[in-house]
Image (cartoon, rainbow, N blue to C red; front, side, top):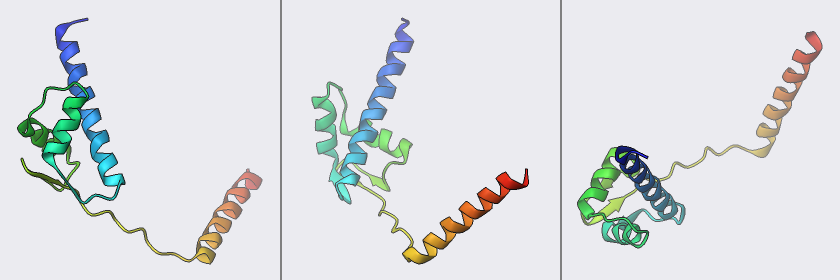
Length: 106
């Protein structure tokens, strides 16, 4: 294995683990998290990172609406559109009928 390949793998593993940590934080309903907590988690996973490098990675990935040395702020979650169950059922029924008719017409 080439040294370049090794460093590329470490970089992609770091990005993947960072994205996982951010997704977990967002999934737990956090709107923001201290940068130092993410840095510590990554260090516990064996990475040698600084707050500056983590902020740079986050800014490049777009995983957060704002990232500073103190805090990482997530974009607010989009609210799903409210639809009533009956109109959704009608849409599904129409799609099923259309799909069935395509099979018959061939």
